[in-house]
Image 1 (cartoon, rainbow, N blue to C red):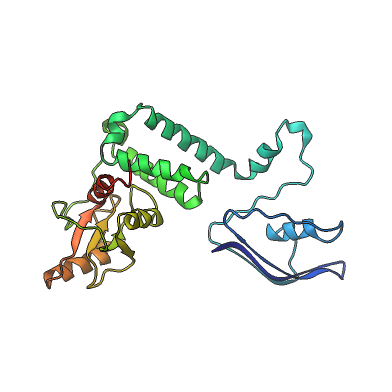
Image 2: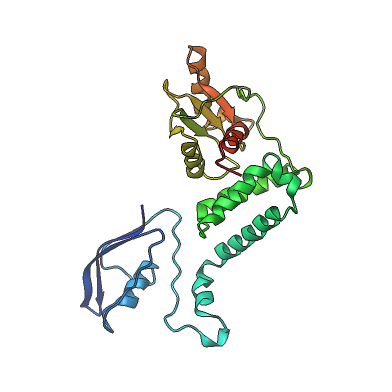
Length: 273
């Protein structure tokens, strides 16, 4: 999905046409070069992207959560920054988060928190951090997810004990169930310590399961994330849990398992270390 899309952009300066019919899209990880003669409108186009210059025609759209940083084409030489450092000043908070996650991952890897990272949910959080850092890019969604997980664990005194209350009370979880992941139609619900929904679905796929969005009569497994409120009946994800319970009452063999049990399956299958 493009993070920026432009369609038939038009720009006028002092009543004269500068450019028109400019269309393009930028995908995540794209690296583009904008070239043209002096006065063609390159800088003006960039200023239109950040809202510093008015658009006189066409449309600009941005994916949810997109942020744009525009730097002067003449970097200030008196600040003592390298070109890379100057380019990254527009994403300072993300760089700091990435550095902090790197320190956390290194601390985990060197055994400073060995006991905590070997037990649940520290092992899943450790795997989450490794996955976030694996591609060298920390997205806003990954950042928000991990921050929420760590905050929630801290509130449970996770830092002191290395453990947290993994499942809310009165959930219909059966972690004694034997679950065959290969070709199982599997649904995730709730928030997961392992990371974003997309990452969890990739891990399930790696185990041979078939992740889908909704609970139906074809569902084999429902996995409930660790970060589920005790008031789950009143939450949107509670509908999937209730649907699975109703299907079990009429004879469908829907296995309802915790994230902890799901993660253990992945470990035994060699999909996480």
